[in-house]
Image (cartoon, rainbow, N blue to C red; front, side, top):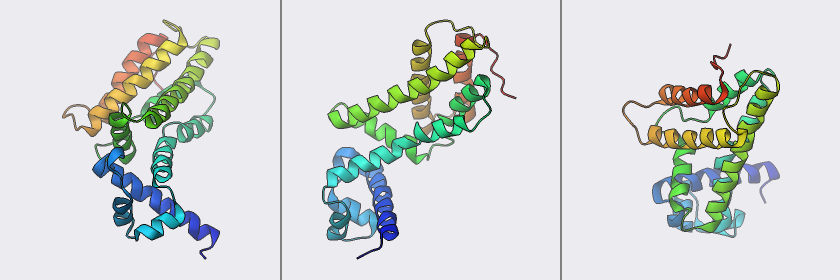
Length: 203
């Protein structure tokens, strides 16, 4: 029997293989044999670690989403206690750096299947709402300190920021010829400047 650390590493490999399969076939097209082929294992070996292939697909999706909330939350908590710095960092970190960004491409695939899959729809809705609360907390912190003059409810502004992230993230992975990470970040900041009444030039 494999040791616990080895088992964890194998599960991580299977999650990564499942993500690659989703990118190739979409969430609805991921089958046991496709995951096994991506992982270089037999179907039986995959089932040893994940007896339910649907559970593995959900875990691959959950892990892919961690980057857009859990990792960003840890990132901003490690920054100086400055709402301007944190808002600019949120904008920067929510966009793909290039068109091959696996995490954003995975979300795009999931979004395309969410209308047919209520479980994926619930996962994406939860992720969206959690990202909104992250932005909202920074906006309200800035307003409480007199740094931001919010031009509307913080919830509305936060929802628009996350929606813009999603839209421009899609444009980047779709390889829009004139919208890369830096251009998209500036477009988001343009809206954030209007919404907060702050120039948002992070030190």
